[in-house]
Length: 82
Image (tube, rainbow, N blue to C red):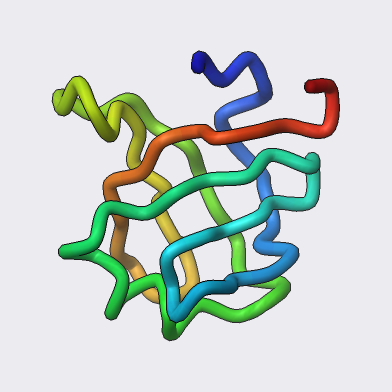
């Protein structure tokens, strides 16, 4: 699934599943690669996020948390539009 939203200026709406899932304010739902769940588990609603392409085929995006200055490999699993 490809992300067609704006890559900048997002906000974490919620983090669930012990850091496995991140939802952004635009309604996009992301699955975080298992090796990065300890990072995303620290994220809070309201944190600023940028979405960037990654080089991994299975988890082709980086969610970059501006507040923590770190990132997690992720894949888009759903959006508000479908």
